[in-house]
Length: 266
Image (tube, rainbow, N blue to C red; front, side, top):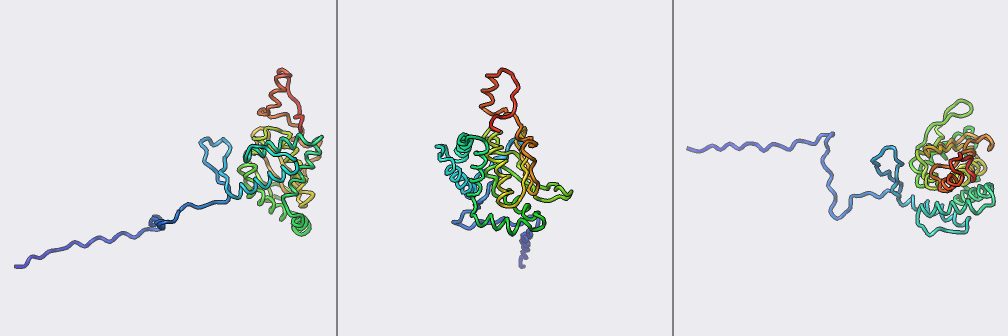
């Protein structure tokens, strides 16, 4: 009598669903990490703290380019590397000029030196007039947000209200300006950044710009397409020294609890 042996069928492997795709296998001998040219935000434990950036190759290139132009204008360089050295050169830029007007003019020359002359002229001639200037304003807002996070920190494009009542995606909001926080000086913010940057975009690119720094939380709102107020009406020029300003702390000790007025460097 023959013995009948029954074999159970081997269950087929269930197909992978779209929700759970099969794991990707790395090719042997090849790394799986990706190189990013842009800054990457490092997650911070405290949501209220300033976002830090891990510099990429593009960030280092832009920082070195900007610093080299500033050093050429100032005629002096710091021994400190990277961003710390840049801040020291910015302080020396403030000391070099005989007055704030000289400092602002020097800062404008630094900004102009970052671009080929024909590029600025063509932009002002061909792009700035399109759509009553809105296209040019939106373009520079996006370029600013993409290329300046190494200098200012995390920033995003947002909408601003234009004088005619319309809104336009030509704003850039800086969550916490690294340049202001590291320089610790209202005067450096106003005379090496805010006022010269406003003048540069208006005079050499044909795009009006209003920058509104907030000296309490160190944020800043760029409004491309908006004309700035007259200097005597600009609140940023009347700000007292920052609490973190080392010079202000020494002045407070000398004046003994007397309330400090406008920043002397602004």
